[in-house]
Length: 335
Image (cartoon, rainbow, N blue to C red; front, side):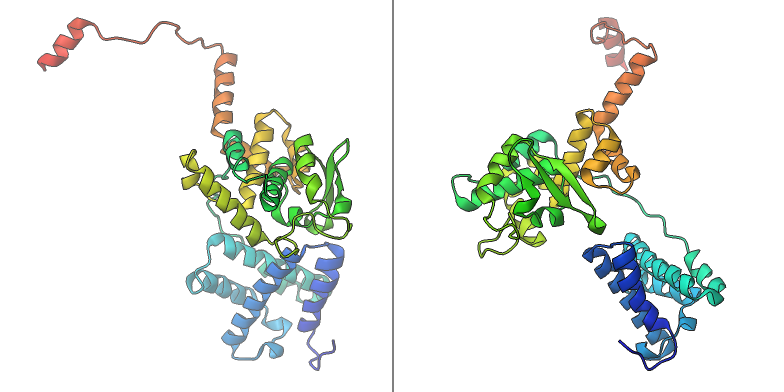
């Protein structure tokens, strides 16, 4: 695309997405959409602030004070959370770093933007379900029916692999090996691939779903299309509601396919699997992301505290429970 303006801003926007994010970083479609949305909001705000059209914006307009005003706008006017505000800032900083690589003459201008700090946010504890709760959910689909069998296989697959829902619905016949050793090739963020082992039960549940065409998705809707994220969320919510009759904890729980991913991670930790192995199993870029599951599991904290107690050499008093003497009870009654 050619631009009539001599200013390089729009050309650099294109090269940022086409050359840097797609080709160099291998960013996922989700990342591209999120960054494009953040920059679109910023340019709309900037054009309104300067009373110009977006086409008239220039690199000189991308200033730190404008970015700070935009961040205040998304929180106070658009009512975005601090986490969303930080995501918008990350997209802008990434773009400005690209400007810096191609426009060193304005280095000081760009460095002031890159130096804008993220806002501290309060991280919610990770939501997960204990194995017995997951087992109750997996027992709800009617496996005697075609779509009940599909739903059971899908939920079992998500729990077994800890796959992101986008990775699960993208699985094709060529990604699966249902003979020993059972495994699946998952296509993760940034074009990264990883092999994940499958339980024999998962392989058995998947076998009837495998299409004859290598390029057709394993998990399909009633119309034969690839299941969407919303479709998977709907199916999971349906079975969670049914299982909540026996497990009231599910009524207070956040529901979404990612909860099964969290549940897989916590179950692996409880089984004693090293956190670095779990990082690779889940396809995390950093072990720091995986480590948050350790802080979320109360039983693991109890086990650590108990191990600390024993290691410290502090022995519990093995006497029976304390009972007040009759004299003490009479004294208290007289007060």
